Image 1 (cartoon, helix red, strand yellow):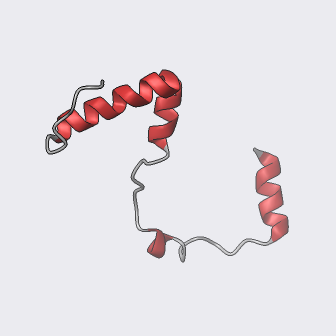
Image 2 (cartoon, one colour):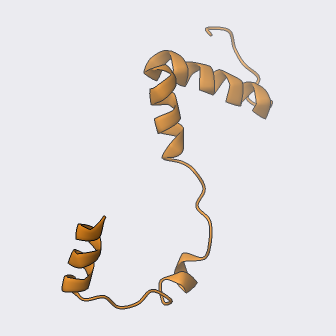
Amino acid sequence: MNAMINVNNLIEVRKTGLQALKEALGPVGMVRFIQQYENGYGDYTKEKYQQPDLTIEEIDAILKSK
């Protein structure tokens, strides 16, 4: 991996980056690292207003039921 890579070639950059992560973190660590940068989905700004206003007691009950 010491060879210079063409940073204008996104496939080469991705392949080299994934290999470096795998070598440094192992396969499981590599996946966990990548999961941190997963793109979200939906419209948070819109959806946050669709959520019901819950009391602390209701939230506590939901958490205890799981």
